Image (cartoon, rainbow, N blue to C red; front, side, top):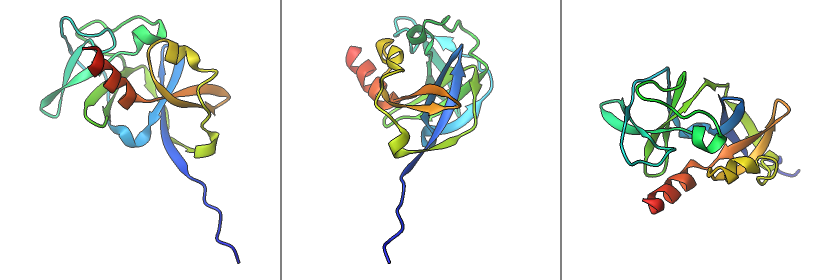
Length: 153
């Protein structure tokens, strides 16, 4: 008798910003908040325009608008939902319009970035893309983005 075949899966949290869908690894999501007040910080990169208060500390507000050719955030209000994400060395608030239900994806269903290359071209590293509800959804690699943004400072 052979051992049962195991399939590695990844939990993904799809989100909507404007007309775009993106996904992040669900295990990086610490909390989902509604609209938040935030403060702009001068001389910061367009995708990290300021900070908001979360659990007694300031976390960076990540705005994907510039990378997706969407309107940017204007202080003091974020978009409708804010996913607090734990990166390797940072915690950020990703401001989006909607957060969708977590889904499981087989590791072999995650393809190299091809159809979603527009996201990478906009400055957002992706670890791959997956088809969800007949849409190709890029899976953001926010740790790679954080490393690149630290180097750019």
